[in-house]
Amino acid sequence: MPIKPPRRPVVSQATGRPSGDTRDRAPSSTRAPHGRDPQGRDSIRSESSPGARPGFRSAGSDAWRAGDERRPASPPGGAARGASWGAPPRPAPARSGTRPESRDFGQRPVLAADRPAALYLSCPSGVESLLAIEARRILGAAAQITESRGGIEVIAPTTASAAERQHTLRDYAMRLNLESRLAQRVLWRVASRVYRHEDDIYVMARGVNWSDWITPQHTLRVDVVSRRSHLQSLNFAGLRVKDAVCDDLRERTGERPSVDTRFPDLGLVLYLDDLDAILYVDTSGEALFKRGWREDTGEAPLKETLAAAMLAAADWQGRPEDGALLDPCCGAGTIPIEAAQIACGIAPGLQRRFAFERLLPFRAHQADWQRLRQAAHDRQHPPLVPIYAGDVAFRMTDFATRNAERAGVRQYIEFKTADALQRPVPCERGVLMFNPPYGERIDTKGSVRNAYRARSEADDEMGEPVPTSRAGREQFQDDEAATFFQRLSSHWKKQYPGWTAWILSPDMKLPSAMRLKESRRVVMFNGPIECRLFRFDLVAGSNKPRAAAPTDAELPPSPSQGD
Image 1: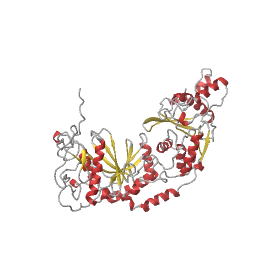
Image 2: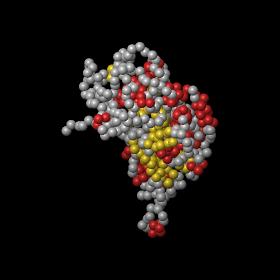
Image 3: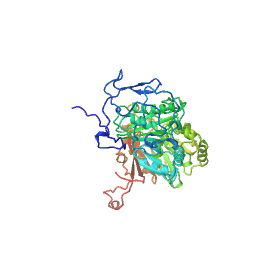
Image 4: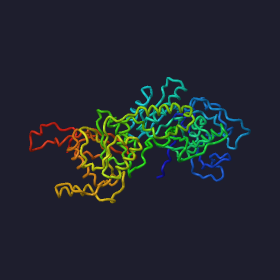
């Protein structure tokens, strides 16, 4: 049975919204691959052009019309479709004659899906509510924050004027890049619309005054993120955005910018779903989990944003009432270093640079940016609670120590190379934050022998622990997990009563393996791996009713203990 092609959304030419009227559908034809025009711009060849390949979907015969390629003084239809900073587009320089492939943008109606400029902060699934709380703390109550899947949206107060909203969003972008521990990126939405084909995306991108953002001497890159998009080629959609930026700057300045796929000055993100296209400017540059201090890593490093999300879910902020923090399997030290910076009030973005520092709208506000950085530096202070960390491998403890030194918190973390199954309690009360290695993250099956199981068997035979070779964090295997977690829970019940343990694991049966009853579980994603952050309130011994002791059956069951 032949597979039906995906149906394009039916969009009204007058309103730009979905319509049931099939007369609004664009005529069906085919599209040829793109080439280069005499001016050096990537262009589209029609099916009738020489060398065209059949089988490509058309952008619609009504998408382009012959005429002058120069843009009108204002966006088509009079709508400010995400234009930057509220400034009207500059008139194009005078030119003689028309270009061979000139097309008229003024005849195309404006679609009604445009939205006001706003910031979008992306984050892993499950962290949206925590990120919204953090953003309100950073920006204050005046910011309008809306949660969505995979991130939050921040809008400036709608009662302000357009210029004031742009100023507010600029201030928000600087603060969030500097202060947010949970966001992956801070994206500035500059344009959006309902689309049917790639030409709609080109028209959307041409509605932005790109000379307000960059000069021809800057470089750019376009990334495309899709969710149920009906387009055949996402790369071609990104190419149309690049063409729009280059065409706009060439009309205004006579020159076009270059493309740099590694370190661009202007990073653009095009998001496509089945109906809407949204274009963002990336104000962060490198992802925000790159704090600038981690150089030494193990085989499966934990992202700083995920470590911060674990601490936020536990509501650990370094306050005296939060208690001490211990990571017995710290690896490269991500969790204790994040905890130390939180306890010391160190902003996560102080040791790195951001893409917005190279963009034109922020150049006139470098003094404001430096004041924000200085204020963040001035509020640093020594921690009010102790922080402990360690690993069974000397190599990983050394990595964590050097990373903490670069992060400026080495003196506030007590590192110790020790086995998590033997480490004694460092203080009376605190929080155990634990991210054990697991097979999906580290593929080392068969590379080392099962040290924990060998030690367990030796303990059973000899009646006492015997020395064995240490297994590093990166050597932990799936078949070791059951033995390790059983021994770990037994050790915690003996040594850490009164503590709270948080463990991140993809194994939904972890509480049963540890013979503990979780008091809370939080969904989090470690990259593509769906995990749970389990909370265990540790108590000594077991409160399970025993048949031989009738009086024990009357005791209330412990909220943290099970069998």
